[in-house]
Structures are given as structure tokens and as C-alpha cells.
Amino acid sequence: MTDKPVYTEFHPRWYRTRVSTYWWLDRTPYVKFILRELSSIFVAFFVVITLLQIRALGQGPQAYPAFQQRLQAPIMIVLNIISLLFVLFHTITWFNLTPKAIVLRVRGRRLPDLLIAAPNYVAWLVVSGLIAWIVTGG
Amino acid sequence: MADKITLEVARYDPQRHTEPTFEKYEVPFRQDWVILDALNYIKDRLDGSLSYRWSCRMGICGSCGMMVDGEPKLTCATFLSSYAPGPVRVEALRNFPIVRDLVIEMTDFMVKLKKVKPWIVRENEKPISQGEYLQTPEQLENYKQFSMCINCLLCYAACPVYGLDNLFTGPAVIALAQRYNLDSRDVGARERREILSDHEGIWGCTFVGECTEVCPKHVDPAGAIQQYKVDAAIDWFKSFLLPRGAK
View 1 (cartoon, chains in turn brown, red):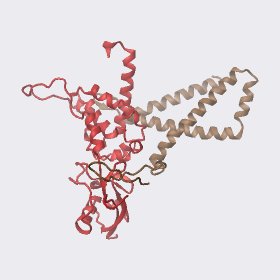
View 2 (spheres, chains in turn blue, red):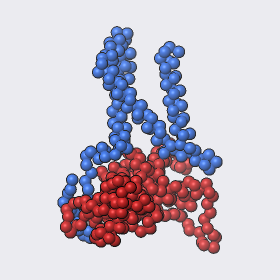
View 3 (tube, chains in turn purple, yellow):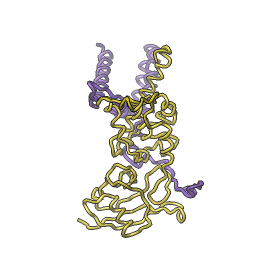
View 4 (cartoon, rainbow over the protein chains, first blue to last red):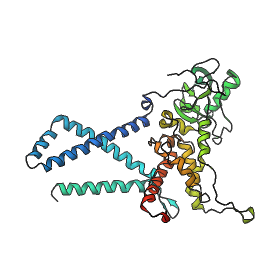
């Protein structure tokens, strides 16, 4: 953990603690932060899957069922479930953080956090509903 | 209820040690004692060589910040009874060089603070004969929260970004810069932008959010940084979308 003490002109021996590689295991909020950062990998995974899906659609009626078949492999299902959990974690923590970044004042009073976060959830529900409606053949 | 509690206090004497070690002290366990009272007891009765900073013992001066059981705390506002039956670990604030025992070196913070001009910048000072600069309660409300900062540095001790890279401007400095940016009497936002919008300024922040959690004055530095990010991004878009005159 320790370096040799650092010598400077006025303070001959300061002690500097070196940050451990595993600093993020020290406290629950740090772990949650690292998980949120890690979730970007799973977001990317969903993006790649969607792009592959679009490509398979473009390749015609034979390619698409083959693509669906591949998605039904147990490993893909497990990966998808893990990704979904991470993406949900990402989305919910992100929405809950919006009141920190956005300050709106109405008649001089700051809008409560709930009113800043809630529209995100409403938009999320509306868009999800709309997509579900289109996919199920509206 | 036990009448004694053990404190494990980090000791570092630059003349004798290469790294801090923990020393145990038994102090009276009293409901009305904060950690600072226990440290004062040690200094007065058990070991006069213990070094630490404190002054007001009422959460205003910001000098008694230390790590208590691994969390940054103002020791004058942290009760012993929260840690019963003990032992309680007391260490110097994390992420700063240690001068001795519980005393940290904070020049880095002071240098950064001065760079963002944490004072009201005016183009023209009006003469005293013209009276004060007036401000409405709404204008005060805009920055009041950020003005509560007491420079105790708990936010720096909680910030892993600062711990890993101490070039980062850090939470309190950005919150204090924002305190003046949002002040209706101030015109210094443009001068501060260069430091704040730097890679080591707001964009260094990865929004861990712990600075806000540990702040004893509810300043919300994480909020200040994110709000400034939004402002800086809007300014950046404006700078190339709008004609020069409209900026």
C-alpha cells in the first residue's frame, strides 16, 4: 500500500495513501456506481442484437427464422435476461438522477424532484406501449 | 450500557513512521459526546502528542473532517453513541496527503478554489454612495444552497475520481464556482468557464454522487456539477448554431 514518503521543500514527509484497484468494493454506493458504468456493455449488447435483427430482416424470409432460432439458444436467453436487468437498472437509476441535473423553478420555487423524474417514466411507458402496439399488429 | 468505548486512532509521525498505524484508546462513553469530544479527551488525558484540526465544534468552521469507520464525517457532528459498542476507527481524511496523525495537507484544494474566482466579479464597481447591490429573495434562492459550503473537504474524501486523479477540480470548488455563477450580482461566469469546462473540471466527474451524500451542509455538489454540464452543453450548441450577435 505505501510508497516511500514524498519529500518536498516544506513538508519533508507527507504520507500519501495509494488508492487500491478494488476501491469500489469499499462501499455499497461505489459498487452500485461501478455496476451502472458496467451496464453500458449490456446496453451495447442490445444495440448489436437489434442491428443484427434488422440485418436479418433485410436478408429476407429465410434469414429471419434462422436468426430467431439462434436467439432461442439457452446461452442467448440467459444473456438477454442479464442484459435486461442491467438495462433496467441503468434506466431507473438514470431517471432518478435527472432532478440533480435539471432545476426548474415555477414562480420562484424549485419543482420537487418527483415532478422532474416522473415525466421520464411516463415517456418510457408511452413509448414502450406504442412499440408494443405496433409489434402486436396494432 | 458500557461506560467505556475504544477508539482506534490513526497515528503517523513523519519523523518516525513510514506509514500510519492505529493506536487504541479507551475513552468514557457518554451519550452527549461526539467523536471530537473523545479526541479532545485523548489529547488532554491520555496522549498529548495526538494531532488533529478543530475549531468551532459546531459544524461551521469545517476543520474537523475525518474518516470515521471509513466514512468522511465532521467529527463535531458525529456522535460516539452511533458507533456503540465500538471500537471506532478514526483516520485522516482520505485522498489527501497526511502531514501528521489526523492532519491533512489541503493546499491542492486552496489553489484550485482560487482559480475559479470564488468572489463576486463585477465589470464596474458602483460607488458606495449609490448604495448596496439589491437582490430579490428569488435571486438569493438561486445560489443559496451552494453558498452553505464550509470547505470541510468531506466531498473530496468521498470522491473516487479525485482519489484516482487529483488533477480533477473536485466537488466543492465546482459548487462554489456555481454559487457565484448563479449570483445575480456576478458577471464572472465567462472567466470561470475555462477552468470549469476543462477535461479536469466538470467533465472529469463521472457522477458517483457520494459528494452530495456526505455533505454535512446539504450543498449538493453533484447537482452543481451536473447542472453546469447541462449549461455548458447548451452554451456549446449555441456557440455554433446561433449567429455571433445572439450569444
